[in-house]
Length: 315
Image (cartoon, rainbow, N blue to C red; front, side, top):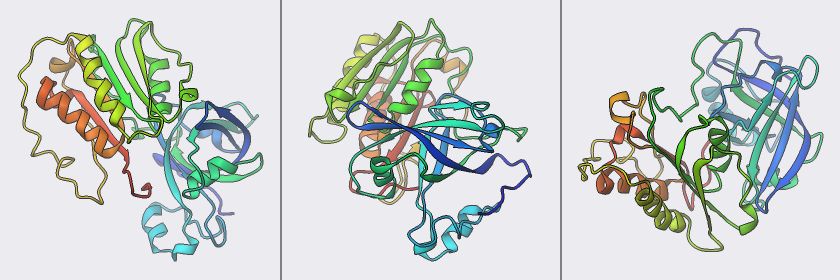
């Protein structure tokens, strides 16, 4: 196994193994990963992303190259030597849970053995190995990978909406909002048993939409406009132009992802701040509704197409 670099970089590879698997609802499993170096993973909270690398079809992790241009090195490998890569949200970090090491929790969606990540989620057992590429606390700077970024001055309502792939991130965000935060949360999940108990400020109302075989995003398309109406936002000018957004010009093979680098304090201070994530087409439709029809300033809307229906997940 390749040794970890001792040079502090924003993100670092961590060797881990599964030490616990706990089913959540009908469609999720919480995996606890433990590693000798996980005490160095940064606990940035909110919707902090990280990457999980699963054993390659041939050689496991033997051919994984952990250099600065790790992605270029990964692409240069023969396909059978590439470790499948998927992106997840850090559900919890315990830097001192294992003596000199640490633990990391990740909630994974279980939807059959349709790919390497979903197969791992279905069959994961204590002792299974996985490599984590995540933020390194030894790096003195911004790690990136946190997209929930309302300005500190924000005192208006929040809108959080997404499907099951967004649920882990929404759960962490809710846990870390100010106690006086208020707004609406709309979550679309596969089955009624997936309506989990979320710790949240009293002012954050949660609407669960059970898909139960309906098309992805259909419940969100129905319930998010209703949630916005309940917020009784002040009148704004609708019909803002989205044509110049790189996200709206994305092709069929590109990821839709548009997060304002810094939500404008003057715009968001008392108005809505929206965070949308999940299936790309559904989330894009919600964002267009907020900006073009409701009149929410586009600088106050973070939206992330985590995946595309009919297409294998990207790394």
